[in-house]
Length: 311
Image 1 (cartoon, rainbow, N blue to C red):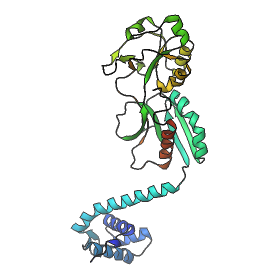
Image 2 (spheres, helix red, strand yellow; image 1 turned 45 degrees about the vertical axis):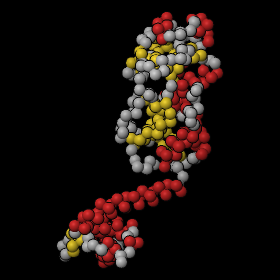
Image 3 (cartoon, rainbow, N blue to C red; image 1 turned 90 degrees about the vertical axis):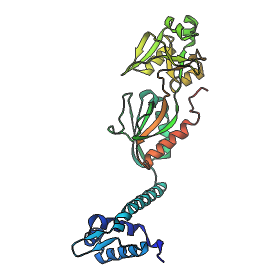
Image 4 (cartoon, helix red, strand yellow; image 1 turned 60 degrees about the horizontal axis):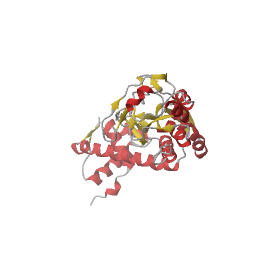
């Protein structure tokens, strides 16, 4: 009876190398062992499988039909073993070296930068590079290990860890409301001062709906338009007008009462599709230890529900 225990990682590696090189001596030179030892390991493998894997002659070592059949299994087994060993090794290692994070400007200021000190205390050997931009980042071309992105996730060539969804609120300062009154339906916005974010794809559209109904676009004229969310928020806090902004941006201002939310019976948004807050990283069966560590850290920090959400 053949002993399946005789198949080990080294035997599979030698088999794959001989299959590819079609030579015992070439593999022996590369591995720093004798050709007779390689031949002996292959013979043991053949005994275990009960099949001849190679035809041997003086010029070459030719795979048999059984050898051709077995090669795919051998490659899969060695890959899985390598992955398992890497995963086990990772667990004993400490995150170290450079991790490059890319994030939207204001989200990075509000919800990444404040947490980096604790990340560094926890993993002192990490070197962190944080780049903040509101431009579209191509994960395949731009030098980033993790991209924090807010939007609709469509590209399947990278992985995404979703932290949660972004919600929008219509808000203004108590001073603005005292002076200008409060809108009750979206049509009322025509008579109000609106502060509108304008990115590279144009001004944000202001969309509203009753829960369960369809989104309706209500065109607004911007008293102030800007590509900088912080400037718009400063103007709103000063009573210049109202903003339609996400919860992560104005959640704390609403909690403190510096801004007041209105038209609460309506859902509001700037896009009809759900907008996810996610960390994106290149497709890999096992993401690098640094990537996993940083994403797990922010999952813990942001919590569920996300700490900035209002309800």
